[in-house]
Length: 227
Image (tube, rainbow, N blue to C red; front, side, top):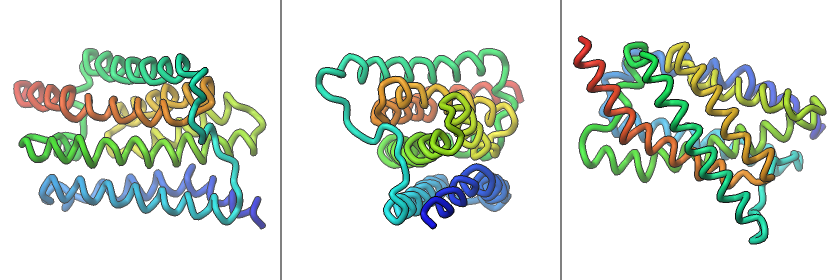
């Protein structure tokens, strides 16, 4: 029974969650909500999915990928995981934007970029930490490990979990979903190589902070000047 529940939940994360995410975020009324309401809604949905994932783990004893802290002797790998994944993720975003992807960003993505100091605090203390903890726990903690268990292949599990992560960002248009897929692959690297999810959580947080407070505002300014 436990194995069946895990299999069904893996399918749910691979196929159902991306569809639900896409359909929910394509609702035009979201663009009319105050930005802080959007932040709260996004954070709440991520925490609910993370809690559901935790419930599945508790009732099935599902495998987990690297859900332990690195020993002090592995501190170099911990640091390398954080720095390497952060620089790779931020560098990837900068490279894709430099290639002219700014005008393709969806209206919702531009709407999510904070403008006021208070909105930036929300992004720094609510949005980015929530994404770092919840998305890494779900996609690199639970999904990656269970795909390895089901497929008996780390590269295949790495690819499938990254694609699922990218599809959950399909509201960012095709280029955004592709960027998220590559980012998911980057964030899986420290989990696979350093055997810990915690560098990925920190790196994800830093990448989102850079995107919301640095790269994102540049996108808004560039799109505005192009228009």
